[in-house]
Image (cartoon, rainbow over all chains, first blue to last red; front, side):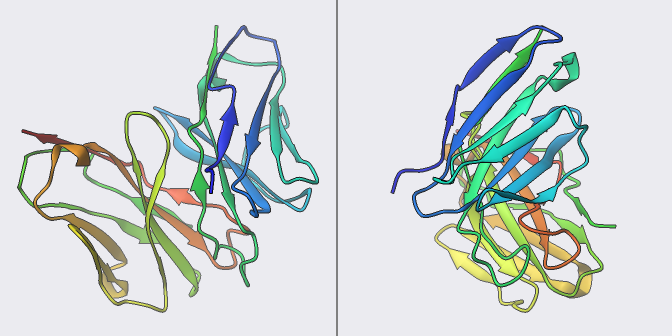
Amino acid sequence: KAGVTQTPRYLIKTRGQQVTLSCSPISGHRSVSWYQQTPGQGLQFLFEYFSETQRNKGNFPGRFSGRQFSNSRSEMNVSTLELGDSALYLCASSNGQGFAAGTDTQYFGPGTRLTVL
Amino acid sequence: AQKVTQAQTEISVVEKEDVTLDCVYETRDTTYYLFWYKQPPSGELVFLIRRNSFDEQNEISGRYSWNFQKSTSSFNFTITASQVVDSAVYFCALSEGFSGGYNKLIFGAGTRLAVHP
């Protein structure tokens, strides 16, 4: 099976712009989660989608949003970019069928490295 | 509050040495899941192992072994006879069965392992 794919791999934007990142999960997986990785804050959970519905959300401002399509592909959007948004954004997929929250194993993509100038 | 602590920021060893990466976690949930991921320079997080809170059996997979001890809230990872290809950043992560909600991984800060020839 093909792994999780993310596009683009690299992005350079300027402050105030907005950006959209894309994630295609492993075939058959219906859950997609997003994480932000920075040297200062480490890996932090942004949100999780399953069957086009956001099921969980981390502590990020409303400038960070996401959505999931019927084919399970997901996009995340960051509006009004700030310098501090420079990070590696990782997407992870899982089958989402866990009998309780937290039971899934998440498989990660290669990430999108966003630089905000 | 939930938390994962990886006290070792960086470890440097010579090839063929054994090395143990420490992980201590905090959670109030009685059902939880622990993970180890490897992040090579390419950036992708590679899944290594998942353990649930009901199963304290140690696990061995080739040169890798994991020691889970609920009494000390630890989930340590040992690499036997390390190789240069083991050089990477290793993350321990926690997923809670109820409090955290769906698919929210809480990561430690990571341990950077450098294996020298």
